[in-house]
Image (cartoon, rainbow, N blue to C red; front, side, top):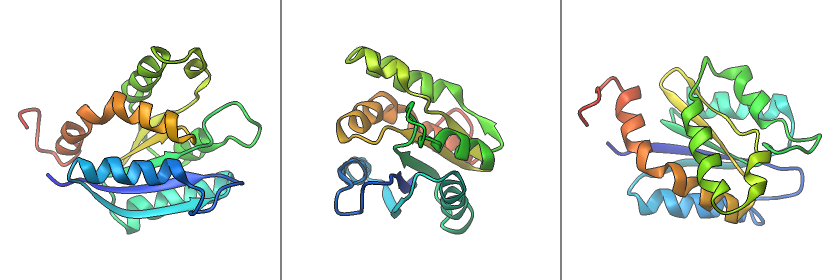
Amino acid sequence: MTLKFAIITCSDTRSMKEDTAGAALEELIKKEGWKVASHIVVQDDRVLIAGSILEACDEIGADIVLTCGGSGLSPRDVTPEATRDVCNREVPGIAEAMRYHSLQITPYAMLSRAIAAQRGNTLVINLPGSEKAARENWEGIVSALGHAGHMMAGEGHDK
């Protein structure tokens, strides 16, 4: 199964040109043989982020949406809340795996409020906004994403 991804970078300070974390995720996705269908940057605004997630899920038809940024402790960090606004069930093991993996590298990983959740057959995963942290979190979950795609497509556990 070739997974189709959408990347949504949530930032008040970055444009596509400065979005090194999103660019790194594009590279990592393509390295797995998967497709990047969309990559955008939106402001740290709950309504804008939620709308971008809806578009990626419902219009673009992404299998997996990766948000990048907005999951920390800053007052403008609202990505987890926006994700919950438009998703119907959480997948806590993914966020737990990212934090566990990152805690082996830095104690600051415990400050992440990132979540993973489903909207229908699309998985939405909140990743950090820094390139280094986005790469580290990806490394902690990439091995399960193909299986997640099969499960969401109703193909069962044997894939």
